[in-house]
Length: 122
Image (cartoon, rainbow, N blue to C red; front, side):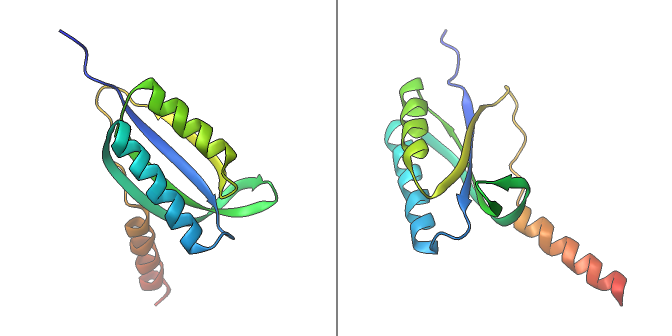
């Protein structure tokens, strides 16, 4: 019996200074490529966040994450296309363990933290 195809997370850090249209198009292109050659399980926008350290003189980046399954050819093509894109600040494809955890919704967590901070300030 063949082993199930492994799952991967693709984490994208996009230039926050790039136009929203450009970032959305890149995201759509990534989704289409994954769906053409594999299976897209989930995609999330985590919004613009402060970087732990500057990358190419950028202090912030827009984070997006995709969870998918696909062959090695898909991984190679994603890596190739993302390396040559001017919109991508950094990317990483991570092979997941057998029981991956659910992707958190960081925008929801940020909203809850802001509400809690506002309540503490009152």
